[in-house]
Image 1 (tube, helix red, strand yellow):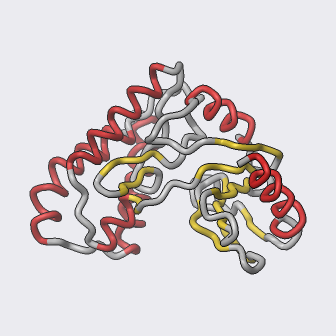
Image 2 (image 1 turned 90 degrees about the horizontal axis):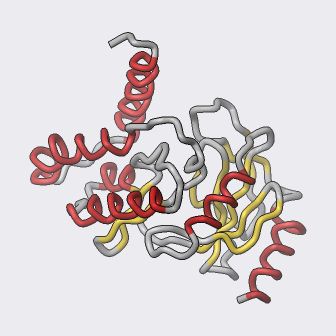
Length: 219
């Protein structure tokens, strides 16, 4: 494993970073990946960073922070505290601006809604248990939403832990659960509905605005 991590980190320095172009356009939107050198593949992007896979290293992924986006040191500390738990990835190596992480396979709940993939209750229960574990390690579940959690073979996984040092109260996961039990289970699941990405993005933007207004006391 150690030799593989060393080889991958060297590949990142020599092949990925010099040719990669990614940009943080807006702080509350995913970073934009403009160019990825072959044979690397972008698996997804969050508000701070994007995740890449090299076909020769299928069990690890590389998370690269966009220029100007902070947080890599905090994320390393979160992984140190989480240690080894099946619902989370692991950090094998860090060197600004990238992390080498254990690859988690699955489909985000966001993509499940788009593709009409059923989300069983066990996924929600698993994520609840994982977040309880987070709290037991002196961390704070923060910004846990449909893009940051996945399901794999009917079990729940938490993909993004980068904000778990943020002690500010956050109700995102509680709101996801309410939507799951009150809307998704009785309406979407029986009909197998597929939600267009444009509609999901509208809901996401509207929810963010609602939370901002709520924080200002405008309800």
